[in-house]
Image (cartoon, rainbow, N blue to C red; front, side, top):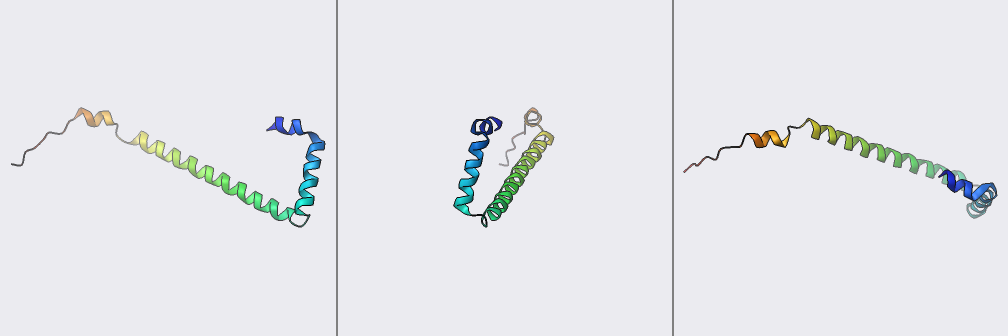
Length: 81
């Protein structure tokens, strides 16, 4: 990401900011920034939730009895006839 901003440079960023300011106007920019902030916050929360679910699943898999132990003691077949 650092390379991206270095390649644009300060004059390029100023031009982009001026175009955004002209396009949206000074009254809409705070609303847009607030909405963007909420979106980023919700995205990060979603990522954390998914990471927590993955960790819980991994712990559950690690703590469950292993399949090899179940295969070691085969069940005997019973005929009820």
